Amino acid sequence: MIEIRPRAELGAAHHGWLHARHHFSFADYHDPLRMHWGRLRVWNDDTIAPNSGFPTHTHRDMEIITYVRKGAISHEDSLGNSGRTAAGDVQVMSAGTGIAHSEYNLESEPTEIFQIWIYPDQTGLPPSWGTRPFPTAERSGAFVTLASGMADDSDALPIRADARLAAAALSPGQVAQYRIGDGRKVYLVPASGRIEVAGLVAATGDGVAVRDETLLTIKALEHSEVVLVDVR
Image (tube, rainbow, N blue to C red; front, side, top):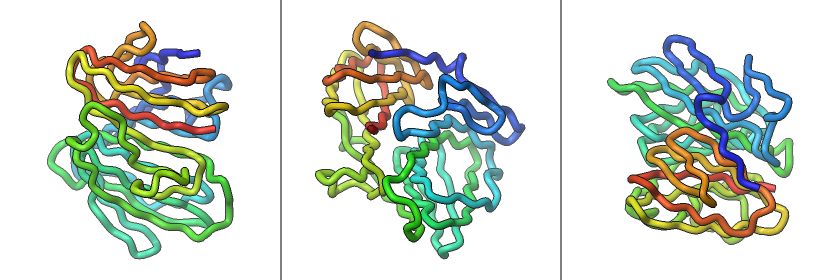
């Protein structure tokens, strides 16, 4: 089963400094049919105005991944961590027993991010945070794992969930495949461009919900950056 969820039909929020699209129920957007996708709870598509952002707030028992599409996000938290994550790179936060953090766009241009929340396999663990660069050239033509809690993904940023975040950069006409394990689900979003999956077309910001499939074949119809999450 492969379902396209057009960006225009997603939940939306406009707060002046923040324009957001919600793939799943979040804040004031509620759809009982889109509460989660397996262990994937949140996929927000956020555009943050320059010199603005999310002031200090708390999280608990959630794996939170930020994929920066454009610009950069600057992070500070109650553990004393701070860092700037730029376009194409990823940061992860395991909220564990509780963490307070802020996320600001300190750039002179809007910042665009995917904010992805995944339920952890185990609750009550100490919180943590990390970030690292992932050069786009390394994911040219094929999916590269960026964050993962799966045993074979030792080169990825660690999360505490049986889940994987992967991304690929594709040229027009280029094809990438992703194999799906038994009983697993995938949620995929083009961060840019336009793609074809099993004869269905998805454009920038559209969601692609996948279940009961074993192999995804993704063809780029133009230069495309594709991000997916693999969960149970």
